[in-house]
Image (cartoon, rainbow, N blue to C red):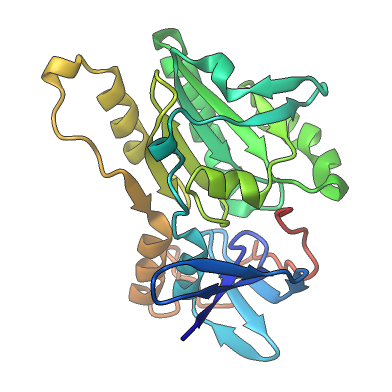
Amino acid sequence: MLQRLLLLQAGCGVLLEETAVTQSGARVREQRGPRPLKTHQSRTTGECELRNRGTTIAAALMMLCALPALAQDAEGPAELALHDRAGAEQRLSAYRGRIVIVNFWATWCVPCREEMPMLVRIARQYGARGVVVIGPSADAPETQDKIEPFLRESKITFPIWVGATTAHMEQFGLGTALPATAVIDRDGRIVGRILGPLEEKDLRARIEWLLADPSKRGAAPPAVLNTFEKHAKDEHAGEGHDEHGHKEGEHAHAQGLDGASTVPS
């Protein structure tokens, strides 16, 4: 018997694909094109309320798209090959020997944009200690022209790569929802995954653990942290009000993302 799951792109509210999951856990994808959903996005939570033909899909359903895929670190060091903004090919393996934070993002993803200043701080503070932040952009070709203006506006100086897809994200065990972050040790292995908007303390804890003397390290932070769950719970606890006291629908900066770009598959 097959159970059907809808994989929803959290940043843009687009149905990417349908996946049949067998009782044994095997996943069989049906090849279907993306179908747009109407969305309403809150800047305070970074989540989308997804509606399709008048049916509201609870924000908790978005967590399905963030379920990790097969872990790449089980097969050895992680690899990612994309192009930088100048068109030159870049490979993750070139950073072997350093701690690397790989943050998948897109210009149309509100929580992605909001966490960029924090990533700039992390890159500046830990750079001298061998920590590198890399931002693979999941912008499709039609929105890649927005990357440079955003980088200038936000004063982002760490490496930005272009052309990331859901296949790359799933290869890292990050699902298909943005934002998504992988923490990679000096041997190139993924030791941490943060699914959803970053909290600085969570990222710092993982970096500090990797920087510590191995003989003096405490318990490792959780290998997978799903912040989509936390935001869904916070939204429910707010009973229709955000952290600033606004009622649902009163967000001055809320975005309607009808027809927004998908993460290419």
